[in-house]
Length: 372
Image (cartoon, rainbow, N blue to C red; front, side):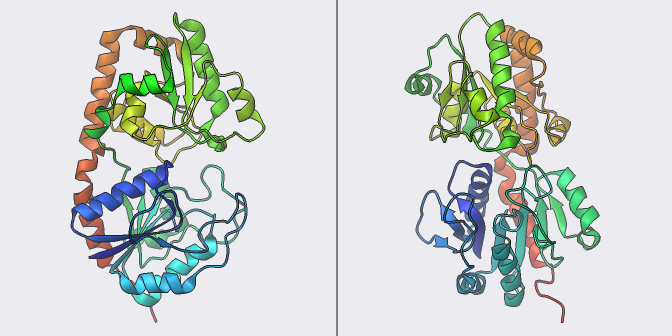
């Protein structure tokens, strides 16, 4: 089957790009031919299609006019359309509406995966009207958490009534994330063997990532620890002037920037920190569990769904308990073993091809066109 997977941006280190890459790999593992379409590509592969109108020419600006001919062509040339957050974010509503209209005209099955509906967290810009997130009942809508599924059902009861909603949690490469190079990565980062390294996988400009809270936690642990503590923010872009920039100026042993392999990042770290006020899922929590690293996270609400799967995740408020666990090898092992078992049982990416097969079946069973 010829599949077109669409997102605003692909190939980056942001959560949506990482998740889209997993779906692309899963679809290709099933033998499908996948075309990547996006407004902006961080990387490039043969066959990529850039779609004007999905990405602004400058930060904070409006996207240029939508390339309707390109969208129509992609709908005509493919047998399945996957809109991965491309029908969810309020960054390019005209493009989202265009994808829906042309897909309905072409009668192509559509799977929409919704990561970030505009009413959750901090919207990229003012949200007007009822266009985004897309919510047409002809399409299959995949939500990454139960909370969002309930909110979709409350806003658009027809989606729930017609079976258009499905929850599919983001999955992780359980085996692959455990094979990172600890010593080599720490050496390249300039981290000494006796230093305790806290990694905060987050964007510098995202207010929901709570950089001030992360720095407070790192500083509090530093005061309780008998060797140097270092705070590592994986985004090296300048933080906007304000609380985040002010906090970063006081971080203990600060490091900035990402490494090429996720497994190396987790292997290098002693502790993973995600003190976000909002996350659609909080992928680093599950990834840390797969990599057997202690993770401290919260207070974002969806974390409760990860805990319900069996993950044990201390909060940033309890620095004393975290320090005690780090000092106790037996307690650390028990927690890491429990988390690893939970993530393998519920969130292993090895099961993704089977999940995608079911979603494709459901999407093809839906009506695909606008009723006359």
